[in-house]
Length: 186
Ligand SMILES: Nc1nc2c(ncn2[C@@H]2O[C@H](COP(=O)(O)OP(=O)(O)OP(=O)(O)O)[C@@H](O)[C@H]2O)c(=O)[nH]1
Ligand SMILES: [Zn+2]
Image (cartoon, rainbow, N blue to C red; front, side, top):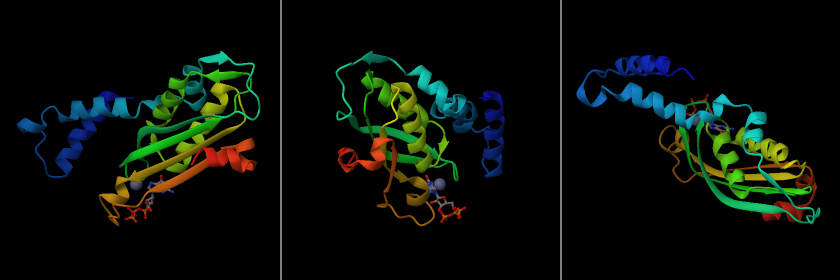
């Protein structure tokens, strides 16, 4: 990510909206926004494959069978819609997978969701990204992801429907066929 270029353009943006980028309160804003973008869009720097490699700490769990799903619920993330660069907030992600001989470190599931969300996203694609990364990191074809979130491009502007929540589900492998696995993500 090009921090200097972001600073330059944020300054231009402030001018374009009729602000004085040199007034006291805004002097440091371009640099601050550039730092924020580096942080909140960090996932842009990595491919799904690279994120899977970063967070692939697993433990052998030979006893796991095809009937045993690991489910983590209510992982909170923030993302940014690619249409308006507006915040997706109040988002929770539920992730389930069936281990095939190894289990992922629990914190890595939350880290994967966090990093995949730190991109300009669509909620639907975020679900697919998380499913794909979990599948590779845990070495399993069986993954389910449910996301519920609010989009500020719909709540704070436009239609201004404050209560609208979007639910998306992504199923890979056995999660496509088995209702009891889908039910675990509810
Ligand atoms: N499918 C999907 N759509 C999204 C997501 N985030 C934002 N959108 C939608 O993207 C669409 C962009 O529509 P446009 O008509 O190009 O933009 P707009 O004129 O600002 O639309 P309005 O929001 O209806 O005022 C809107 O309907 C948004 O609600 C997302 O994660 N998934
Ligand atoms: Zn939007």
